[in-house]
Image 1 (cartoon, rainbow, N blue to C red):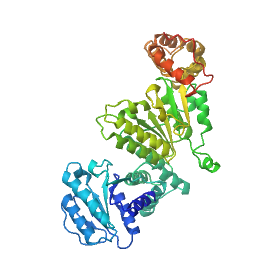
Image 2: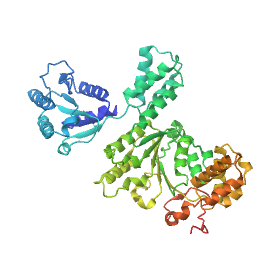
Image 3: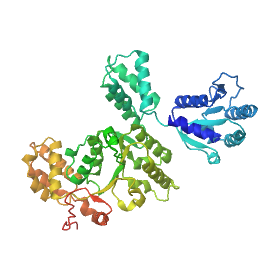
Image 4: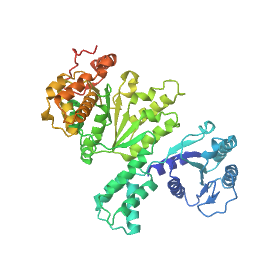
Length: 506
C-alpha cells in the first residue's frame, strides 16, 4: 500500500530517524515488519518498549536494555558492528521520555547521525506528531493512514471465515459493510464487526447500521469533530432555490458513473450570511441529498485552550474525514480560525495553513461546506476558486421565501399550513430570518397550549410582532454583506436576488 511505499522511499533516501504517527501500535509494527522483509533476507526488525525491552523479529539474542537510554546505546552498537545490515529499530514509548529528558533527545539525535554511516534506521512509533525542537531537522514525520476499503474487507472476510459466521451478505453486501467501517482504526473495525456478528444469528444488511453506530461513537471521541444525522432534506429547508438547484445538479457527482463520464468530484461550497439565514440547515441538507456521511468540524472547540495540541487535533479530524470519504465535512464558523489573532503564538495561522493546504491537495473525495457569519474576518485566500466550487450569499428571505419557511416550520410541528394565512404572516415578518420565524411559531404554540387550544394565525402574528429582527439590530453587518455581494464576490442563494432596498432596518 501507500504507507509501505512512503516508508521504503524514505529508507532508500537514507533517512535515519522516522516518526511514525499512529495510535495503532500493533498495526504499525506489522507494517514495519513487512517493510523490513522487503529490504531483503538479512534485514531484521528490532523492537523496544518499556515492558518487553529489546527483542528481534529474527530471534537474535539481544543485549539487556531496561531503559530508553541504554536501548539507544545498544542500538548504536548493533548498527556499528554490522553497518551493511538494513535493519529497522522500532521504538515505542519514546514520546513519554523525549519531552522531559534532554539526555534522551541528545542520544536520539546522536544515534541518527551515527546511523548515517550504516544501512539501518530508527522508527519511533508515537501517538503524536509533536517532535522536540532539537530533533525537528533529523526526523521525518510519517502519518500511518487509517485502513482503506481493501484493508477493511480483509478484516471482515477474515472474521467471517475464521469464525464460520452464518452470513446472508452477497459480494456487494460485504463490500458495503466493509466500507461502512471506514474512519475506524483496524482494532475499532474488528470490534464493530464482531459486535454486529454477535447481535444476530445471521449476518445481513442490518449490520451496516451497527457499524455506523460504532463509527458515530468513535468520531464523537475526536475532539472538535461530530458525526451528524443528516435529517434535513431539500423539502425541509425553505427558500434558497438557486442553491438547491446547484446541489441537485451535482447529486450523482460522487458515483462511479460520474467518474467514468470524466466528471471531477465537487470540492466544496462556502455559505456566507447573517446568523439564522439557513447556513446550518443547508450543510445538513447536503449530506441528506447526496446520501453521504456528514461530519461537523467545530472550530470553536478545536481552539479551546483546555484541549491543547490544536494543530495535531485539526490534522486528526481531517484524516478521519478522508477515511470516511466520500463524505461531507462541515466547517462551522470558519472565521474562528483566525479569531485569536496574534495572541496564540501563531497557532491560528498554522492551523489556517494546514486547512488551506489540505483543501487544495486532499486526494480523498471530501466535500467541504464552510459556513461564516463575518466575511470581514475571512482571509481572501480561503475563498478563492480551486478550494471551493462556489461561494453563496444567503440574504434575508424574500416574502415568497418567508411563506415557504413558515410552511416548512408548521409542517415540522404537525400543523396543516393550509389552516394559516401564510401571506399575511410573511408580510408582517419582513426582515426576519428563518431562525426567527421558527422561534415565533414555537412561542405562539406555547401561548396556544397555555390557553388550551390549537395555534392560530393570530397567535403567530402576535409572536412575530414581538421579534426584534437581528437584521435591524445588526444593520451595519447586513449592509456590509450586501456590499460584498454587489462586488460580485459571491452568488445569491435565492431567485430573484432581491436586495430589499426599502427594508426599514432603523
